[in-house]
Image 1 (cartoon, rainbow, N blue to C red):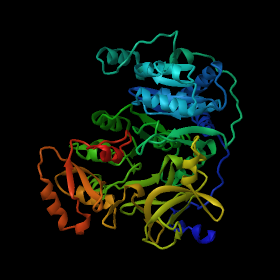
Image 2 (cartoon, one colour; image 1 turned 120 degrees about the vertical axis):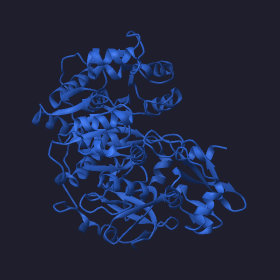
Image 3 (cartoon, rainbow, N blue to C red; image 1 turned 135 degrees about the horizontal axis):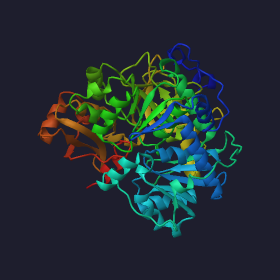
Amino acid sequence: MSKQSEIKNKIWKNSYPKNVKSEYDIPKQSYIEAIEEIADKYPDNPALYFLGSEFSYKEMKSYIARFASALKKLNIKKKDKVVIYLPNCPQFVFGYLGALKIGAITVPINPLFTKSEIQYILNDSEAETVICLDINHRNVLEIKDKTKVKNIIVTNVADYISPAKSFLGKLLKKIPSEKYDKNKVHDFRDLIKIDELETNIKINPEDLAAIQYTGGTTGLSKGVMLTHGNIVSDRFLAYTMMEQFVDKSGENILALLPFFHIYGQVVLLGNSLAYGHSLLILPKLDLSLLLNSIKKYKSTIFYGIPTLYNAILKQQGFEEYLSSVKFFFSGADFLHSSTADEWKKKTGKDIIQGYGLSETSPITHVTPFDKVKANSFGIPIPNTHAALIGIKDKEVINKIDTEGELVINGPQVMQGYWKKEEENKNAFIKINNEKWFRTGDLAKFDEDGYFYFVDRIKDIVKYKGYLVVPAEIETLLYKHPKIKEAAVIGVPDPQVGETIKAVIVLNEETKVTAEEIKQWCKEKIAPYKIPKIIEFKQELPKTIIGKVLRRKLRESK
């Protein structure tokens, strides 16, 4: 291995925006402390907007404190696990932060999960408490006896919007609801009526804040163990990259991306509320509601994913709805250059990319706002060290424009996977006696220390001895005027190793044959990279955050 000094020489340090340092002292706080301090500093400032309702920082802090008190009264203690089985809504904020306030460990999960998926996570996490929607409470009740669950806390999306809107929404079935037996479950609103109890529980940076289950794109989800120190450091360090570009306590931030995902939890919820900004919460993707809400509330910061940007680009005249937005961000998946270029052409603004994983709380890299480079996901945030290692020999790579596996060392790196000893052995590598996390992503960097995503190592196709990068072929296919989406995978073939297959979604009311696409590719890439199999689909399988589920494509016949 290379010397530690060579790995940590930070060739990107000269690329930081002015006044941003490469190292900071990180606050010794729990996840919620900074949020409570902001609530005391700006009590009347709006914290949350949700379907016409508004909560000031003072009101939000009170709800959080009362919910924490309710949990304490239910005998939920420090280190107990609380599953948050909710979509984006005020109750998620109150429940998540209320649990953290008493030192409980949160386990946020997808509100679309089925009974079997929930049962797996409940048993794996050993959770005893679940907060869920009324329409989902039966999923929990029916498996309760197969788990350690003692408390089921039930709410409805409309519980914290105006009574008139709530009544009308349920009457017109726009807001689904389901009756529940209060003898079997607890009502969220009833619990939160409690007076605030003393909840001054000592929370240390090394205490677990969350068990964050990975998306499960490659099989059963693994629980990522994140401490208060992990998340606070990531939130604080990432914010140093944007602090001088934003108005203190004055931004309105779109919160469409799900809070149960690490992107939503830390980048949106935590990073906004800890610095006094307002969250415009939307419970689900509705493009009309999205655009009109941004226009009404004059949102200034937009966090998205590539599929969301692609969907908005299809909306006629969308630009006028986004005129208040100063910064557009993208993460969670690869942003194709065709999307970024079209967005810049229509809005006049760059999409600022970042990089991270659940295992890194999540942010490791952010593109400097004042120097965006095409296709780059940016430079490591302060206190964060990044390196590349060879796929086979695991030797550190110090050459620019040379591909290798991205490894990360920093205060935001997880403690490990919950109860997964073998996976933990493979997840980390020792470099000069320090533990580095292996991302599983193939990347490269340039002379300024900007990093570029190449592909997931496990997705690389091995064809006739060639290593073929699917993202390269997908980027090309996205440039075809009739192709809306594309995913490239390898199909096992004893003759060649893996055959290259492209799964394609066409734009509406367009037609093109597989042979025409192959001919189009011939002029642009080497023959061995041209997909041998092309399949057309109506849509690609995706996670709720928008990542293509290549596992599903490989499994489909």
